[in-house]
Image (cartoon, rainbow, N blue to C red; front, top):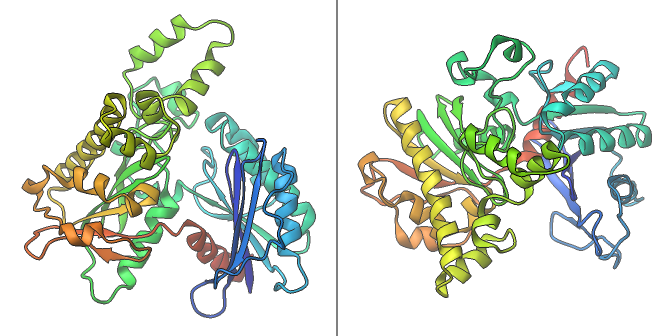
Length: 400
């Protein structure tokens, strides 16, 4: 079975083709259309060995998500590629009606349409892509995999907002996100025979979007993101948790369509970009901080402090900590951020080996010092692989 995985965002679409035989899915091809709607969209497509398959078409036309997914459909339908047998989609928010990964049918599409009010910046693009691909590949099964499902194990005390019941009955609760990343990390640690699986673990998924998750025996018990991916720790363009009174203050200061303006600010113009007044690129912000830029330095400090606070809070919640795991673009590749977050957490038994922390790599690796009482790991987030795992199981289910 060959599974096409689609991971769509507001301005990019990542895609992969997996061979899902009897063993776990294996990536054969991967690509991305980036800069959708911008002046110079780019197209990348390569095989597992890194060979370029774009045919020299690095620059493409992709003014809309529909144009972009058309490029993907064309690329994966090439004569030299295996026939697609199933398509899986990473969908950020399922809304209140869907609490598991599912085969997509008319009712699922209706539920996703109703979920748009919970994720107006994420779900519409995903729904448009799903409709287009279902029309392009009508003969195969299509499956939705949600970023929230891993967090369905959180207890009610962790998911409930202290607001009037009429809103809670509408599905307003803490859902949590980056669940496919967290689940992939749990799977990788369980499969690593040289590592004793940590009973109490904190996963810090740090990238443009950031979340911290508390995991006990491989199950999510709490996480920093809530109803939407806007809350929690400080992120690239999102502020994380805010005083509700501040949100009301901001609304009073705005003119015109206040809700739309506030939503744009909180999702695109806040967080590290607001503090540093620089583009959303941690490497550049750190370089500016090293040159003495006070705004960039403050942005880095606010970010690392917020993550450190979340790690400490979840360690207290679980009654201790057996492992701290870093994932995501920053978590996997920014040793300075990892070191600054770990600094001051010695009371949790955390001690990082500086040489190991400075090493680059794209595989699971241990960063903790030999005398560290708590393990520290870098584990790559394999969201697309996790989608392929679920699609493989769903497609083979008797009633699929």
